[in-house]
Length: 234
Ligand code: XBP
Ligand code: MG
Image 1 (cartoon, helix red, strand yellow):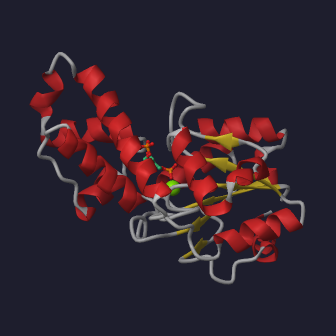
Image 2 (image 1 turned 135 degrees about the horizontal axis):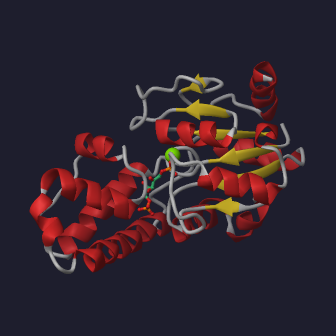
C-alpha cells in the first residue's frame, strides 16, 4: 500500500445533510416549492453530482418541468446557488470532519504515507471543507485532489480514480481507497483500486459486496490497521 485515497462526502465528513439543506435553500430562493427530506434524499443519492441529482429528481417527480426551454440554464443556476449555500454552511463550521479522520490523516503524514482525494463534488466544496477543518495549508498535504471538475463523468464510473492513480504514478492495486457508498465502491472496482467502506446513516445497508472490509466508524482506525486489511487482500 503506497497511497491512501480519501473520498470526501460521507467519508471525510458527514456532509450529505448539509448538501440536502443547501439544495432546499436554493429551491426556496428560486421560488420553487420543492423540499427534499432525508428519506427522499437517501433515494436521490443513487445519482452522484448535484446537477445530475436535480435532473433525476425532476425526471421522477416533475417530468413536465424538463420541457421548459430554459432547463439547461436553470439546473446549473440552481446548482450554483446550492453550492453557495453549502459553502456558507461549511464556513460557519457546521460540517466537522468525522471523528477519527483527523488523527488518521495526521498519522499518515507522520509516516510519509502519500494521501490523495477522489470525489465527485464541486472543487470549492472540497477546498472549503479542508481549509475550515484542517487549515489553509492542508490542501498541500494531498498529492492530488481529484474532484467533479477534473473528470467528465462521475462515480460510479472509474474516471476520477483513474485520474488520481495516474497523477500518483502508481498502479491502482498499490493504493487503498476509503469510501462510504456503493457508487464509490463500484468506481473503485472499475478502476482496480482496493476499497474499504466506512458507512454513515445515508449509506448504511447499501450493497458493499466486494469491498475489503466494512466498518461503521473510524474509531480506533490507525494506519497499521488499514495496512493489515490491505495486506489481507493481496
Ligand atoms: C458525493 C456526491 C456529490 C454531493 C454533492 O458523492 O454525489 O454530488 O452529494 O456535491 P461521492 P455537488 O461521495 O461518491 O463523491 O452538488 O457539488 O455535486
Ligand atoms: Mg461519498
